[in-house]
Length: 155
Image (cartoon, rainbow, N blue to C red):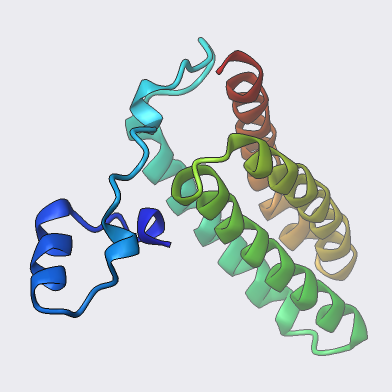
């Protein structure tokens, strides 16, 4: 649990001295860092990720709003899929970065790929433009999956 929190050593020492933190959490965290992993030649530079995700989530928000306006059973199914992809997306970050387990992250992103492709179809049946707005998300996830596969195989 302490690895997940990424609490620095001085904070742990201070908390232990105050009797506020269990001694079991004072062991040194693993030295795994994303920066030390071998990465594929086709991975975009780091600065691309924030703007890409910003655009993707903006498109996702617009598409989901368009679908939610319908309010019927199909829209409820689409919104359920939206929730599932959101949980899977957050889980990927936890698996990859917090738990430092690219293999678990890969399993997660493969399921996420399937959910997002399903969303493209379901959203598109409800509102054609909403389905098309999710295509960049599916394409970006394809790239993310390829990067994750490469990292698992080469590290």
